[in-house]
View 1 (cartoon, rainbow, N blue to C red):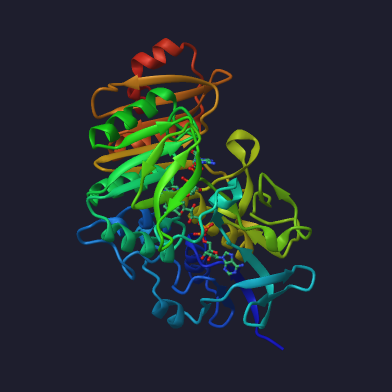
View 2: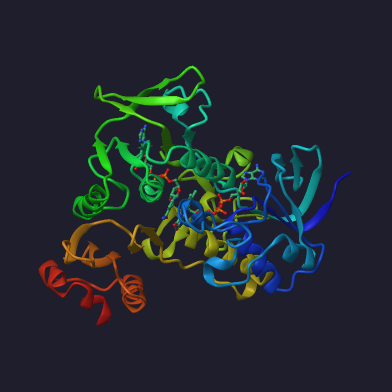
Length: 426
Ligand code: FDA
Ligand code: NAD
């Protein structure tokens, strides 16, 4: 015999926190909701881990960044969950799920049953071993997905001020960690296989701007190659990395950000999987109608593009979570999710936002030697995506509004000349 709840949220990350807040706003009664999380702390705003958490001066520490401060909502500490009668089962991994019987089995041997399950298991960082590189659990090789990873990174950083770091991967983690390492007075070399950073989103022109900026801060780039092996000292610490192109880079610290895999394994063979995630409908409901999926693990229909997408960003985690709860509690009042994808990053004094889809033809605008510039993506004669560095609140809002409207673009040169004012005037 185990415990029984009306609602169970599986996973205790960003989406879980926002779902919990929404459940209380919708009047869920004490004792009806349970959150089960492998992490030992209440849900927090994960983006802080590569930014404020890594600062050398006045770093962000819990409880300051528990959800839901990211959207200027309440900060949900453990006390808040207690006061709202929400059962927070922390430090507990769910080992298996039986969606037909509506039960979960935890690693501590407890069976928990539900009427409705919200899957918010997020994703795990890909490991170098999966690419055939032996890491031997070295104490100075760091990944960054959760608080434990971030704490390890801070410790290693503090032990090698003035030393050398190698950052493997030119994506979000690589770029944000490289900036944090520089701020911590560590020399950084970035290594990635593509010919420019942020290949999933940036154009070469956009990437050049950031790479030049980083070079100005002393960061070195080794592009178009991958790591083949590490060199270790007698204590098992990495001392250098060897690259496929023959380069050897000395290292006191290695940060690895080579992508993620959604945590779907509990549901394989039980739910439909698409684009690597749990396939849901516009209500965030999976192929079993008692199961909803939200956040990084959910593959949901993006109406605007007429396509199923899986997004790996915090805004999508927050909003899919809220939408699922609305669809669960007030199904008749809840339409299909209609989301405009939104990504952002902040590094050094820079800050950019992106809306929509980076598909089709690209039109760059603004001053790429200055502080504010951007790009539009135009597909089948319609504006479908937009990027802006260095904008203000009104400009970002204008960009979001224009991208959602998908206005037609007759002439790409006109669009280039108009630049930001094209969006502002809509
Ligand atoms: P999330 O990963 O937050 O939570 C999943 C939870 O499920 C975890 O608590 C995990 O332990 C738990 N779990 C998984 N399997 C389990 C099991 N079997 N049993 C129990 N618990 C289990 N995005 C953005 O838009 N802007 C940004 O600046 C950043 N910055 C950023 C920095 C860093 C360091 C990371 C790692 C990520 C970002 N992101 C981001 C991405 C953003 O944080 C991400 O999209 C959300 O955290 C996704 O929220 P989820 O709740 O889906 O997963
Ligand atoms: P990513 O997908 O952004 O980037 C992965 C990078 O790894 C690629 O760009 C590539 O350069 C590199 N790579 C791939 N295979 C490699 C190999 N064998 N050797 C060396 N490099 C290789 O993933 P990430 O940077 O690891 O980020 C992890 C997750 O965290 C993502 O979901 C991301 O969206 C999220 N995140 C988001 C933000 C943000 O939105 N601002 C910030 C941090 C993290």
